[in-house]
Length: 298
Image (cartoon, rainbow, N blue to C red):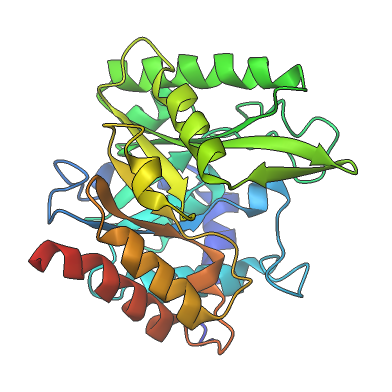
């Protein structure tokens, strides 16, 4: 990857001019709505590191180099048709200082306390953005991860926190993006259930959170019987790109099929595009963006 992000300047600014972050946020050109420029969204996800999930394929620390991650994000955000990013405050603020978010959709990741592999992973505390800061910084909404294990009492605390966040975001007319999964422990490791009935059940639970669902969107994995899954909700749906384990061609084909379904408004992808097997971020992003935007012309 070429050196795009000026890490030295970022570090000096953070050390000597922390107020520059709020100033950059106030100058940012914002959209009137998520769908301001079309009927489909192509968003990049970069909130994995804050939960300690740094691995990509066989490299457990692939996302650990912040300069490299920012380089990849800047390259991706500059590609035609890319609408914006979903990230934690540290990454959003780096991108603000780099001037990479003008006119982009920005969703702030809210609950990152469910650290990957921890015994308290299901008690997913809200340790990043809150609704007040999302509104104050002019962000478009907040994203929350909701893992539901019926055998784990920690689930109810996360349900309550997500419901409160949905209400608080809606009061500020900000989107609440919920990423729900039914989950279970397998030899101590938390695993998401990607069977169609489980995804349908997770949709139903997530849609009922908060005092209003007027501003709620769902971020759902691409699974078998996706048509059946989408009958479970009237809420707008963005597709979750998922872990980059399979062949890119198979992944793109699955996305294309799911994007053609009614109720789907786009794609949110992180590691699969930012860390493609061949290293060509621009090409991977362009391929995914073409799939997303093709639906607007249909």
